[in-house]
Amino acid sequence: MPKTLTKAGDILSAHVAEAAGATDATVTTTCPSCGTRQKLSEASVAHEGTDTVYTCVKKCQPILIVSDPQRIELPGRGHRYASLMIRNVAELEVSSGRGTVKVAASPAALEAISGRTLKYRI
Image (cartoon, rainbow, N blue to C red; front, side, top):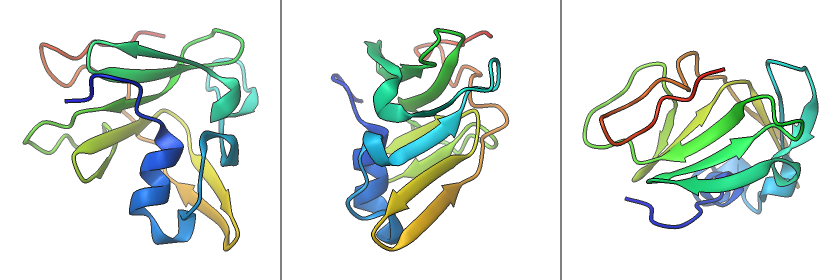
């Protein structure tokens, strides 16, 4: 269980070969509420419980959550990378020396995954 901020860029860099060297400054997404394109490094980042929550630069809503996926699969809630899950509400574009890697949006990214993980409402 993460007890400190876990950066999405670090996870993608470590687990997606095409995204090697990625940081939050090289990962771009769009807020579904306001349509603002932003790098994860521009978003507000906070540690809430066991989650790292990225919130839109305009404070509209959470745009990405890094969480503990537990031991069960959670269809539609995110992408599992080893012991962590990236729950992104919109497609991610990861720029690297090898080009751009896209990570599909997770349709249920903001839904609660257990009694200890918050449901993020928009």
